[in-house]
Image 1 (cartoon, rainbow, N blue to C red):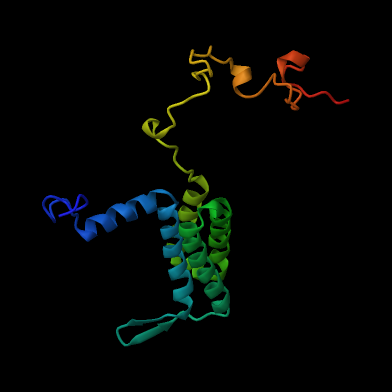
Image 2 (image 1 turned 120 degrees about the vertical axis):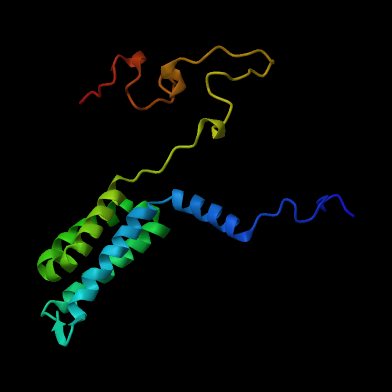
Length: 191
């Protein structure tokens, strides 16, 4: 028995579904998952209804219009935008605005935006994508050393650094022109 072997095998092993759920929850929390899901759900009815044949008893209702290709393009673009939100969270603003614009264009092109179902899902998902912001780490995960409490090389504690010096203002290398030492008071001179 080696040092790496657990004392009782299987005692601390988690079920693979619990591990998958936890990993999926962490992955989902780092990106606008629900916005992408709503946009994908909005794309399907927009692309489907112009090509659908609804059967009401013995009556077949064909929804084919001359704008069938346009609605297919809008639906596919919405699905691609929703999936791109999952895997490229940095495009959230572009994808959200594009989803809102495609949802608005789908009203006259694709049977009132998939009978308003696809329109509402795509509009809501686009708004959620635009408003999503990555979360900030909790206090426990922030690095413990701060600029205000640094030790000097001789072992004594340094004095707290002022607000301006903490952000680099007043340094001889400060090229912003906004430090209080040059009298700019945060204003830039025109000359």
